[in-house]
Image 1 (cartoon, rainbow, N blue to C red):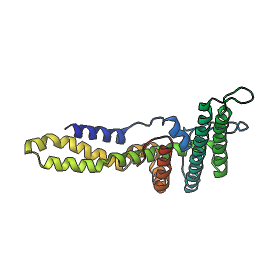
Image 2 (cartoon, one colour):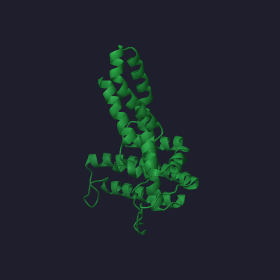
Image 3 (cartoon, rainbow, N blue to C red):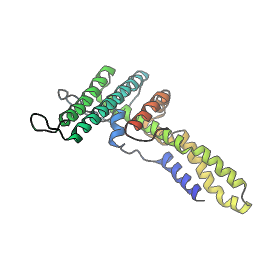
Image 4 (cartoon, rainbow, N blue to C red):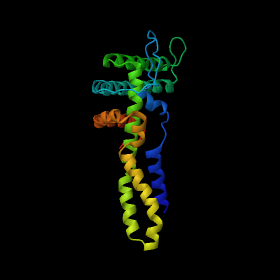
Length: 227
């Protein structure tokens, strides 16, 4: 019964969760909230109107996302090297810890690389933020569903129910039916489609393999668990 309740809870979260802000690292790696070069004026984000994703913009975003992830990897390497120098406690000619300026340069270089990648992809800040939000909602739910294997858990629960006494089967029937509905809603991305629209979600799914690879690389770059 404990396992049944846990699985029901997980399915409910996936199928009916409200749209939330993603953690800062995830949003940045997905292309959301990226910083532009100082010479560029920030664009006003207008999400009051539905965003119409196109194949060309999605393809451009996939490439942009890949470049952003590469920029994060380069920054991580530079910061690690700077950390080693800082730990050594060596001072430069101005009396500052060696590695401090390298750390700042690495962060600035990452921001510049993001802005350059966006421009080369031909995407506006609004494109990056709106596509990033859509992609994150679709891919995170697909990733979590795969990790939890709700369909597999439902099958196990149905098999367990079949081995119970008739009165116990009857007791579990309503919960398993709820679970069955939640699994169906999760697989069809019902909640995400309500937010972003069927056309946008279907288009993102057409590049799911590439986007999932980028997402898993993002998790690894921040020390998360990829599947």
